Length: 206
Image (cartoon, rainbow, N blue to C red):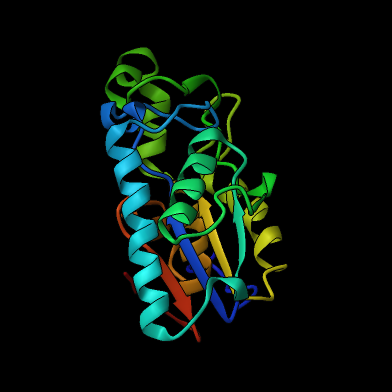
């Protein structure tokens, strides 16, 4: 494994929003590709990010029309995107989806908390703690595998883009853009009430 992830492509202007909170997020359950809906907190986070993004674009003198809007096809990301677009005063349905932006799957671990898994599968939990980036859950994906999937999408981002996806996607995307180590990438904070901006080769938050 290399010391850092490689920036395979540098999009000029990419805005990333993680979906709002779900009950499984709140309970610490491994959600993966299970289609868990937003809870009331998550709905407020998504709507708030839409207002935050609208204010950012207005201050920068930009219009939403210059952006491609794309989301993971899972329900929680679609609802987040629709609430974001509503907060921006846009048609909530006018966006596209891309399967490559789905969350990594935890396979047989989905639905369990880490504490529950320490009882059910302590050896694999210990393996994961030693290498969270490279670890593959039973019937699941690793961050390294997810990185390959997201990299395929990233190389096609050639116009200003607003993307709504997942925590794991956010980690590997930031890892590539910021050229972080795999260990650092897997442990990145992934807030649900802030907006990540990559512009002109530098990261910022709104």
